[in-house]
Length: 277
Image 1 (spheres, one colour):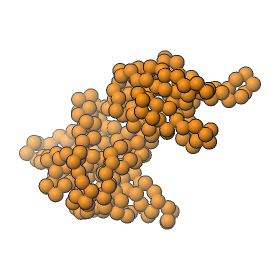
Image 2 (cartoon, rainbow, N blue to C red; image 1 turned 60 degrees about the vertical axis):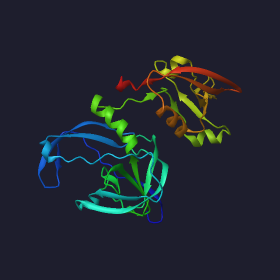
Image 3 (tube, rainbow, N blue to C red; image 1 turned 90 degrees about the vertical axis):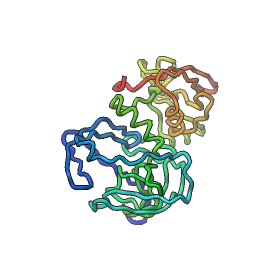
Image 4 (cartoon, rainbow, N blue to C red; image 1 turned 45 degrees about the horizontal axis):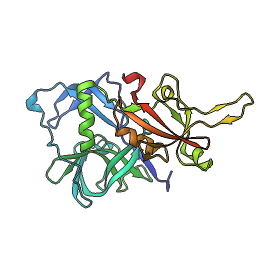
């Protein structure tokens, strides 16, 4: 696929049945998955090793990072253990999509430090050796590093890890809808998220959002088109996900929809996914 730019997800899938962790001194220990968050490509492992064998990396802060700041990436690119590459922060507040769920990951760190397959899950460090991100993906025309790599910022990771350690999962609020691809809505000449389905037992269905359906003659009747949530404009699915990521389960949000040629504001109480309740 030479000449085509690809966003290549470097993460791996595991089922938690059998995991081994090898430390710097080549000692090997069993580990188990405490929890993982597919949306943000982060997992927590519990390593069954003596405390004196484990030397944690100092945790830094990603909120005050600057473009041009020197960084170091550690990983096992192409199976080459304990590889260190260096570069600078080449961009901040980028957004990429999770390869597993399609949900956007915001505020991602962009770096030109060489990141390749095998670097995923490795740390991105500042010049003081503090963790500022977890390497996750590269943007590449060939499958190898092209100088555009992405890391999940440590400030995001901290909140995720806290939930994974306490509960073994990350609970995010949902509206409980299925929505049309952004391109389909654009073809209609409107801006927003078109509701395809809103199950009656979900938060949107309970609140009265209308799904897309067909009448008795087979003609398509468009459902509600979400244009804003809590006054924040929604132009596409990424906007909707971004707003929901800032909310909590149990929050009541005001969803503004275009219903036919009328605008309506509908209060919706956010709920967790069915398998997270």
